[in-house]
Length: 406
Ligand code: ADP
Ligand code: ASP
Ligand code: MG
Image 1 (tube, rainbow, N blue to C red):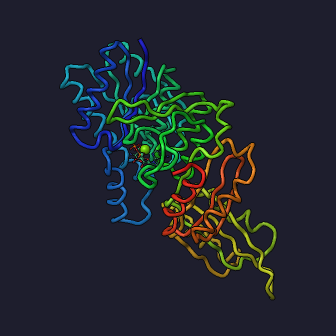
Image 2: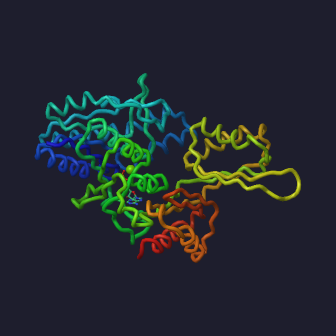
Image 3: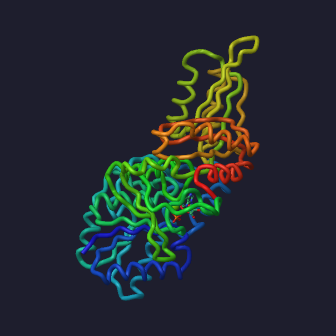
């Protein structure tokens, strides 16, 4: 008898028939005698719609209230999934994140899991139930509802698998696994049989939304091996696990394009110590995640000044602008420019550690496509560039073809 955690994403529970399919799959595992914990997302489109509703009332809604609102999406699905299992005569109980013992910090809309006490989950499993847990949500120590960031049901599943010491963790989605690029953007992309945590982490944080990046971080930290696979068929998926030596033979494992980034530029910032510290400390205090940073000293005449550009997630742009506006008097920069028309294109692979010439090949490919590079950042296993959004997809296809073939 195995203990299995299965997570079903929004499309996989997108309508009553899909929910019945989930119940049927769970039933198959139950019939083998396995204990099953099911984590579900909100039905596809529901979370986006709730966000839209709130923003129609106010552009920057209170984050505690956003969590209160967004948590309802997953609460609908857990009950419907339990009902679908009951309809098949299978004992099932739904639990909210809080009822499942998921305790988080108090950073609303991006809470981190503090600990999980899955006592109730164990008790219900031992009594023969399938336990259905609402993804994406938890509760603070003093009872406030929180959410775990977009895509956070992945994190719920992986954290529960770790806390329950599950034998298997399966992430069911609407594609057959992790591909060399988003198959919706690059039709030539191929499914990967396996990928290392570090590569998955980079791809996820660079825009491959197939897994939430924080969930991969969690899996790496606690050694949770998981499989990404389709809820629509029985094909084997992609195993995500610790790097093995042979993984380094492949230079580039995947390509990703993040269209959800925005660039902020502070024009003519006085060139003196402490300015960057002030800007990024203030952004950090407001929980705005900054990714790439570029600073250019102007060698023109007059007082030395620099342009300071950085990227943030699009949803954080308004908040970032508000923070920066609040600093204008103190810092004395000229103006800010917000640019939402950018895309961040990245290549990722542990093989880059031991191969040279990768950046040159990427930049040459982009040059041949007539794509201008606006920002560059690299790490041991990735190279990212910022390009114009409208060039992003063509650039991605060209880079995929150059490194991963047609
Ligand atoms: P779920 O609702 O199941 O969590 P998501 O929509 O969050 O599903 O993630 C699945 C989607 O991720 C796929 O439909 C696919 O378009 C996209 N995706 C982006 N990059 C990749 C990739 N490298 N491999 C597979 N899917 C990817
Ligand atoms: N429903 C949440 C979202 O859309 C969480 C998830 O789907 O994983 O981001
Ligand atoms: Mg997802």
